[in-house]
Length: 415
Ligand code: GKR
Ligand code: MG
Figure 1 (cartoon, rainbow, N blue to C red):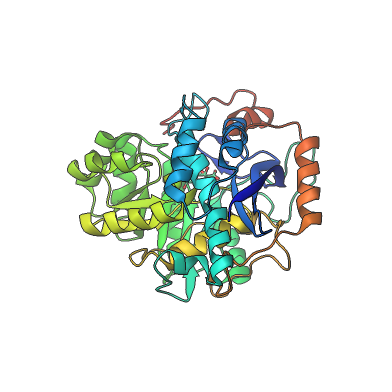
Figure 2 (cartoon, rainbow, N blue to C red):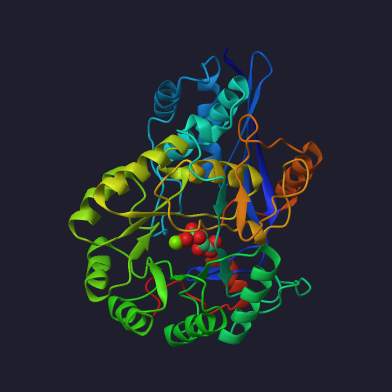
């Protein structure tokens, strides 16, 4: 059994004008859909980033994987490293955090190989990761302040969300539609006092929902400590309040709220330093850059050993990613927080049948072979056509924000 063909299809998925500390989401988010086909016709699916560096890395590594046994995942990694000798990161130079190209590419191809293995064995991917320890995986509502409409477009159904009251209304809609049991606010957007007020209003409206806020490093240490003091008994965790290990350690020393990160710990060799400095209490996994699904379960084990918590990060994504997240979350025993997902903001998919439906904020772990999803070719063709039409090859939230506010400048920290 060998890999005979690989198809990479960049797609553009319609997104909403969601705000973060770098700007605002563009009308489309970019992803790459991956099909790995074996010589017996078995197909494995994957999904990864769609920006230029990631896509080029996938395209350059793909030929090196032809002829590979889909069970030989160490060999997969070394072929990827050989195919991309200059390595480097995938994000823009101005990004505060970067992801290693070789990890991103190896992760992207590992998932379809596991999908193939599962199909050949007649077992779900979770079984290849040690087996599911839970039959369903819970997700949090991912709340964003947002503009009402994209440039030149009609207002979307969510409308504008720029005040604490509007955010409570957004949370109500999310909870009503999907049953989420915990709430994450993308912060670093409004003045910190307004974001504190927002969290307090969410607490009042939803007394039993665990709450978290993530300003993506948009605050100074002083601001972060101020916010933490006001929200001491309100948050289950505070995510990336500041940038840098020393700054995180300073905030951590000043609050009893656990600090979580997907910005200062993105690779295994960064864990020792944050652990030594007590800068972080919870690490967010993400199979797209941690090295794949197996590496994510290894991260879980390492965090357990070190007494750190594990939660899960997401970017705008489709159902292939969501399926992979569900399998790995099910097979990570100490993943004790609800996972992040952008899925409810997207509303389209490339998988066959209805999109995933959350019940009480959770998804059932598929028990069929592999990931348990198949491609809807018409939808894939539609989103691939959108990619070709869209005048966009990179995510640039700051450039798009300037179309709303020409004087806007990216500042980290902002507040
Ligand atoms: O979609 O704006 C966004 C998020 O800010 C995303 O880019 C982050 O990677 O969700 C992510 C996070 O937790 O930092
Ligand atoms: Mg984050």
